[in-house]
Image (cartoon, rainbow, N blue to C red; front, side, top):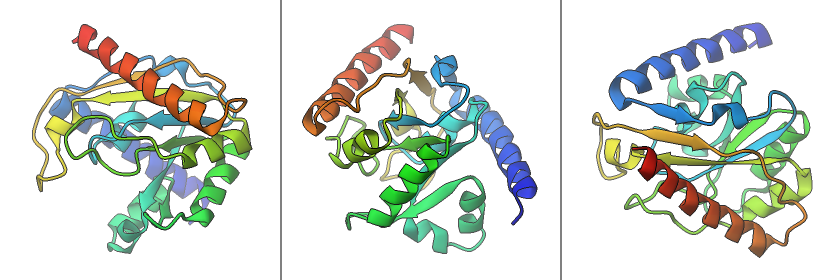
Length: 206
């Protein structure tokens, strides 16, 4: 598919997600201006439900790339759709080096990449441990990191439910930070600490 058509599909998908999340999730987004207007940037977010990728990307002007389970690309039409929404496959639980290389390539080419370093959706709505693999991408690319915190999407669509339900959702973007100079354990600790701070901030915002 040519780039122009792919861009149109992404623009339509973003508009549809913006409408959907506004109507059914009462989505409110704070700090979207903190995402740099150009250059490679890594959005590091917690992961509560399937709603997280569209909620993060819907209100950003720049296109966003993201990992998606390789099995999703095998679903007719849906796989085609997420491919044209800039997703790329990752084989979960295998240490997929090719997916890491693709992530590094996209960042080095100046794209926005969303990563959910907990590895999978939260089973209970709480933060899960951050996988150390995120530090490899950060240290290799030297890309600025924008912490992202999602709240409410677990209640809207917990992993044990087949369908979503209406529930208010919030997304908070922090200003970019530089973490590449830190050791892997320090990077993980910084991300986890920042998420906890952001969750408390979202509670105060209501």
